[in-house]
Amino acid sequence: MNYNLNYKNGDFKIFFEDGQLKEKGIVKNGELDGIWESYYENGTLKIKTTYNKGKNNGYYYSYYDNGQIKFETIYINNIRQNYYKWYDMNGNLIEENCTKTKVLLKKSTSKTIVRNIV
Image (cartoon, rainbow, N blue to C red; front, side, top):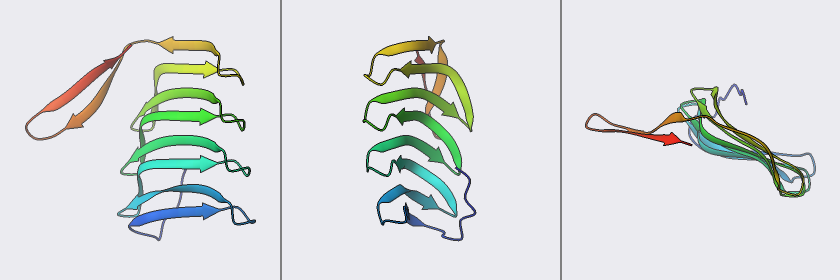
């Protein structure tokens, strides 16, 4: 998602023409930040992902309009990692790549935590 956000901070929502929620998330300093969710017109969750300072960072989930998970992966600084899983419309796993990916969970001046995703 790329938005030119004049809105600087707080909850952000976009609606379909009929008033149904289309997307929601948080804007911090004019950038996407935190969990963002997109919805189908029927109200079912379509995408759930996490942003940090405007960049896709963390788990990304995509869903079918019946609510079943469709795809999951991990992004680090807007780059999709070598971890993904595809599912059919019934939620059955049909393809996966679980190459080890180091995921930065927390970084601070005193300690950095890294976890391998298998």
